[in-house]
Image (cartoon, rainbow, N blue to C red; front, side, top):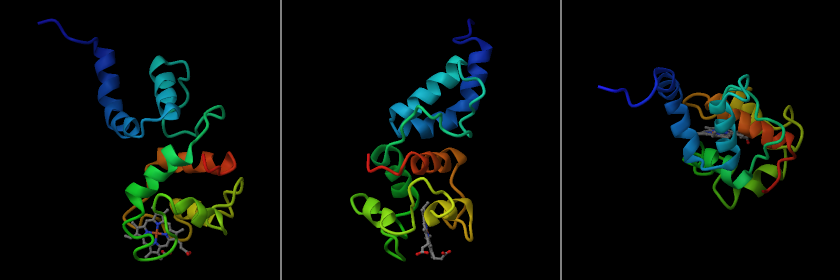
Length: 145
Ligand code: HEC
């Protein structure tokens, strides 16, 4: 029987499909572009684990809030501040030191993702790709975009 895909393609898909599945859920041009570059081999060096390329603008509404909604709002604000629910989160986290634009070290929320001093979510660190989206968003000025 003829194989539906060449072997190298199959291997690629098998390795990437869990990551792709997760990223496609975000339905974002930023993510789609990275994926495209990755698959086309133009940007062969940029693994999905690496920093988001400078020319990709991270969106709070489409990239960051879904991460918060999926991983954080079960406890924030139910258990503790900050309120990370959609509609409230941006004002809550940028009005103080949870997120300080262009300052990763001073951004308490970002430090928590890295485990400083305790990791959030408590069940275990987020995937590096998600942490890097938050990182790039802060480096791009933490816009309400
Ligand atoms: C299972 C519940 C739970 C989940 C899920 C959770 N947190 Fe927390 N969070 C806590 C608790 C409890 C504390 C206080 C203890 C601590 O700081 O470790 C806390 C503290 C924090 C703090 C410090 C608050 C302060 O005022 O100093 C931040 C920031 C934070 N969490 C962000 C997050 C983010 C971002 C996520 C999602 C990626 C998340 N948390 C997911 C329970 C949770």
